[in-house]
Each structure stands twice: as structure tokens, then as C-alpha cells.
Image (tube, rainbow, N blue to C red; front, side):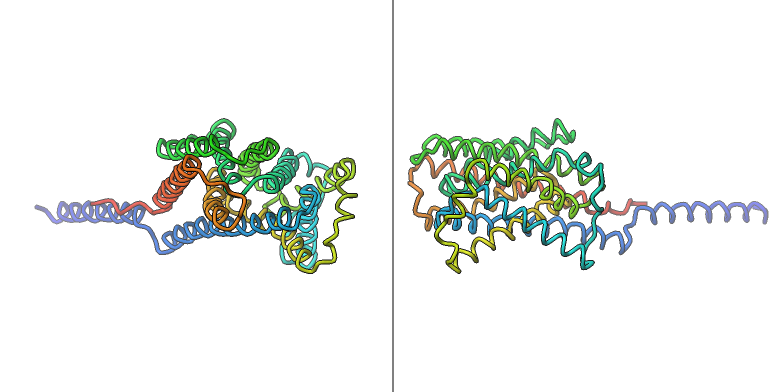
Length: 349
């Protein structure tokens, strides 16, 4: 072999080795990529846990205000929650803790129909909480998951996997079994909760769509949803006579009631924020199911200490079937997201 040929051969080998190194470098995850994937997974889990805890606490507080203390108007309580959201976000923006776009002529058009969905979700949810026992409230709330899944398919184009579909159908079957033997039936309560299911599903789907546009941000959506609906809500409460009834409520001088009422108002802000964060880092369907997983705790707590649950085996079995479906869905969802967040392994050379 000549010197030139040997030099050419060594050059080819060197070039080939460099190409192999480039390929390996492309496939190998860096420490920064691994840290980013891990941080994203923690945000997803943390946002889901934050929403679950907030939803649990506000359900207990709302039930105490509306049922234990007998507060006469869930519409006025919803107005209190909207007002607290406006005040907190306005003050936080003024002192520089957060920022969102100022009100413009086109702001309402940007976020519509979220304000209407937002107030419907809040009012009907509080109404259902007032009229039904906690176990039956949670059972009927399961239908919002199926509605969310259908909404994501037709509005966002998201098709769930077979495992997700089977877990959702299991929840619905369990809910139907439990509701078929409801010994404390309330037509008004059923209607309110099913309307709340519709608004919950619609809110989750459209919230994901609006967050993806990133026009106003999560704080802007919270602020303007409340701002645009507090005046119509006040007008409705006045026309229905709720403002007069609430003004005559005898417990305004009770410090314990006032503490619970104010907690309910500000927990409404915390819950709204947690819904937006959970939807942003996960999906609308995940947010809805996390809310129903919270209801597992509420369901069994209501059986023991609520005092208004009437036990029957059919109802109890149906609730447990629905709970099983919720747990399976949560496991399937986070396992899938954990795999998608993991960087691909190094390609063998």
C-alpha cells in the first residue's frame, strides 16, 4: 500500500468515526435535557396534586357554609368568589407580583365563551353542593369525565387510548349503578349537578384551547372571566331576590360563619388558579379526573360524618366500581406522560 493510499484510508476512517460520534451525540441526552424532562414531570404531578387539594378543601368549606350554616343563596356565594378573585389579582398586579395584559376593546372577544362557562360552572356546582349529599354529588360528577373526553375529541382533536376509554366507561357504569338506587333522590339537585358536569367539561376543553394561544395568560383569564361576569351575576341575584334574602341572614354577626364564608370566597380564587395550572401542564381530561379522584375522599368522608347518606349495597357497589375506574385512569395517564417525558435511549452503534 502506498503512503497516499494509507493516508486516504486513515482519513476515511477518521471521517467515519466523526460521523458516528455526531450520531451518538444527537441521541445521547444531556444533563440539561434530563433535568428539563424531570422538572416537567414534577410540574405535572405537582399541579395535579395542587388542584386536588384545593378542590377538596373548597368542597368541604362550601358544604359547611351552604348546608351546616344554611346560607340561603349559592348565587351570592359565587359572587363572593368572583369578587375575591378580582381583588386578589388586581392588587397583585398593582404591586408587581404578577402581570397580565390590560383591558382592551378586543379582550372580551378573545376569551369568549370562557366567562359564561366559568360562571355557569361555579353557580351550578355550588347549587349541587347545597342540594345533594356528598356521596351522591361525587357519583353524579363522574359524568363530566365522559363529556370532557367527547369534547376533547371533537374540539381539540385529541383521541384517547383504549385504556383511557375503558377506565372512563368503568367510572360511568359505576355511577349509573350507584344512581339507580339513590334513596334520597332530589330532582333539583340532579339537574344542577348534571348542568355543572356540562360546564365543567366545556370549561376544561376551551381552557386548554385558550391557554394554547397564550394571548392573556392564566392570570389574565382568571381576572377577566370574573370581571366580565360579576355584574351580570349581581343583576341576576337582584332579580331573583337572593340579595334581599342574604341581607336578612341572621348569622352575619357570627365570627365562625364569617370565617367560613370568607374562606369559601378566597378558596374560589385558589381553585380557579389550580384548575388553570393543572390544565396547562396536563390535559382537560386529566384535570377533570383529578377533581373526581378528590371526590373519592369526599365520598367516603360523607358516608361516615356527613349524616345524610343512606346506605344500600347497590349504591355502595356502584360507588366502588366508579372509584376503581378513576384510579385506573390516573395510573394510565401519568404512566403515559412519564414515558413521553423520558429522553430516548442511546442508539447502539
